[in-house]
Image (tube, helix red, strand yellow):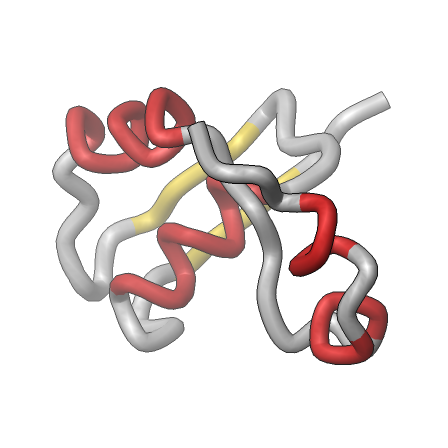
Length: 69
């Protein structure tokens, strides 16, 4: 595992230019196999990493609803 501390202290991270996600979280996105134009409900979305990853991977061409308590 790499030391992420320098990245998390960077101005780019503070500006929201990137986020950090565990590889297992991305695996969930892969297993869903969402296709462009589909509708997706992320019912346990906080903090939103998988939702953002799906939107990014599909260039925003998905009807995405995300909610949490």
